[in-house]
Length: 453
Image (tube, rainbow, N blue to C red; front, side, top):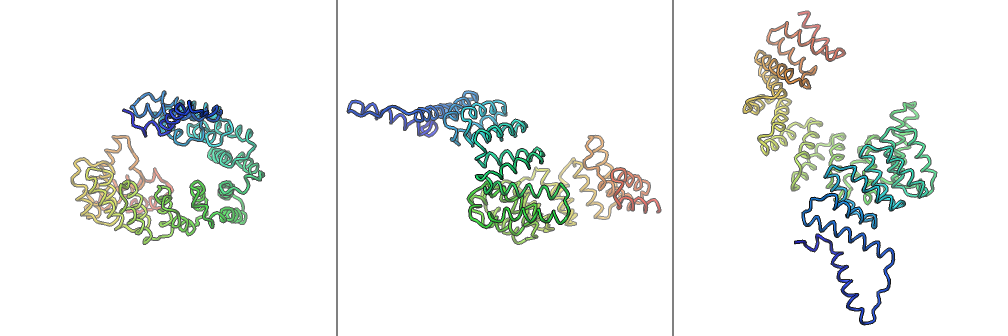
């Protein structure tokens, strides 16, 4: 059974209008002929109602549903909900070719509609067809006279992402010559980002580099002091990479703290807030943020890990340990949380807790063996540590997975062997470390001292 909200209130509204028109027909009421715009709207919403009807009936025919949504958007390209539904269906179905075909048809039917042409270009770029995306936007801008900032910024961002900086600079200069564009906030922010890129990669003289950075700050400053930045999500998010490059942490912090609540509920806001509190070494600020996050319902556990990582970056180990102890208790069968907590115990020199945490595991992975060996070294049991290192190396080589067999592993192995009095083994492992990193002075010194002994 199809519920009314699922097929759309508009379908019901249209039915009522038809009924009223018939009822009034005999009373001299003449609604007049429908305009082309009226017919277009009816055609569009009828197609959307058909798509919703199929979805409500649990249809698995993605192509048929998509066709109805495509027809809706051909008639009504400004309709956001049908487009989001089309994107969700085709991306969820992992059929990017079908999505691009639908969007191409919609864009072709609406050659001067900004939003739909920009979405089509973005999807082309996401599909790895960046040249085609740029050409589509250039054709669109040619038709519309370079009058819309959204399409210009989309073109500039795709060109920059391709690394075509010379072309990006030429296009930016062309856009800045357009009176309708040159004062647009997003274009000013992109210009600032472009100047910072020049300062970083073209290696100008130090004085010129300082001037470029100063100019970038001047370009974005007017928008930082106006409330409009909190009303435009795209502008808000575009400013932060520029501020990050400028290392203007205080200004970033102010923007984040003054942002509206709906902005503060986003992953983007949280990631940048964590970056700022670490850069400012604001442990109390991180404590406040942590309390806010922990009090919120249904928080993704990755967010807790991000907060713990921030505590680790600030050397606030007790808080990081507390978070991972909580995550471990919530997920006692998770090897990831168990090993991460054991690593934190190692940093805190809590060997008893670390060994107790690893003890229930009958078969330790390589990473777990390395942690166990480190705890044994901490307990001044180098002979046992050497045996565990041997097992870890053997397991990694057998699995052809040498991610953990890095210079640090071999240095630790060599030092344990030296403490155990196994000098030949120590020299062998120092040499293994040297082969991986011959420029490392610690390895060279360790190998030299061991050979001298």
